[in-house]
Image (tube, rainbow over all chains, first blue to last red; front, side, top):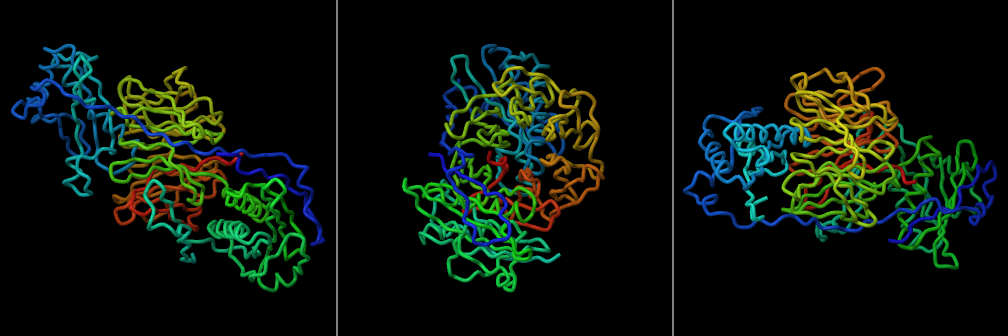
Length: 177
Length: 423
């Protein structure tokens, strides 16, 4: 976009007379060059195939979501088997990595919720590391309130959105990241 | 407090446009108690072009909530016509602006005007703006800024720009528009969320958090070129960027060492330095306008509250004490006020604290306010809220009297950021 506006001159205070001509505009200099906006599209990442055991609905490894109570950040007992299964997979597949995305419901500040979601993914990571997964196999991050599983605005929706999700990446680059 | 409800629909094509081209429409829902009556005569010269200038100046001044338009009649009045200020005073106008739009030899347009005080019977000044025929509204904003400053004593913000995020279906658009919501342009479109845009102090760049890599990563984006680079993509989450007033460094929030903590980093991503040291969450940093202090949100005391610390870290002092949820601190550009979001009875409401007296005032009665952003002259606060389940932007004066609403057809608007004064 071209330069859009060049105010040439601001007149001095003109007193009294209402018919004084506006001062000479040639005396001024450009004081503004406002830039336009060039549009950009973000690339994103492709999700590609993983070993079947990770997505087989009969395998516990296909279960990737851990839900949390309101204002709670600890992994509940009912997810012990799920977490243990993923830890076991990471122990026996040292070249696989996972990303844990923590999430919150929509209430409150987006940035504060991002930090609360991080507490949830960190809790899952700690459980996995205790069970033998290596630190560098597991990255815990947060999506805050930005990626609700249920877009509703009630208790049911909020309970589905307070969760951590596990995504896998295989050593050859295939994966869900 | 008088609530003057007045609707000005600035975008006539609102119903027929796609979201990518959609304009924000502005509704004025409250105005100041003592508005200055002004007459803006029709600009003389090329009728169609002059009309754009006249309309823009009037709409800007009216939208500010500080002025009341006095009907000047339909006769154009240029800056050299002799005017009888007593007549304008009798019509109820405290001030009169008259001007013209002239096409120069090189095809550019010259917008000239003069502003009169009808009470003191003097001309207050005038100016000439040279502009292209496609930028007439920009010239109108400059004229409105001039009139606003002469009559109120503070700088106008009609020439500034705002940034915000639109969510439409599964698309996220980071848009830039003029302060009146017109001229929207998309800086970034993404299938993943974009949050926390903040303007560089010179207004040429935005820093923001994008989730396009399945995790929050901080970018800096040059608006004119569309070039962008990663500022922080450490292991874990990278979020809540805030520019230092010198434009060279940013405060950011990283989880790479455990809990969310505040760091400073150069705009090119080098020179990382940890600033906060707590066992809890420290986030939402914002520099004071002098650059010496960082306000931030922390749950170190058990509930999220606002604290302050030196720009290089060190001991923190608690700033908010009422209630169990005070977040999103934003110091005003004049350093006098802190805007933030307070939860009261389950409702999230925009509040302001006078930093000298520590007096707190709640400015809205809404349910879900978030992400406040001051105008560069500190008079208005732009924020996101929800009406009828839809995200809209609202603006309110720091005294709570003047209110505006900016919404878009068929989309959620959120994450507003008011840009700096145009240099």
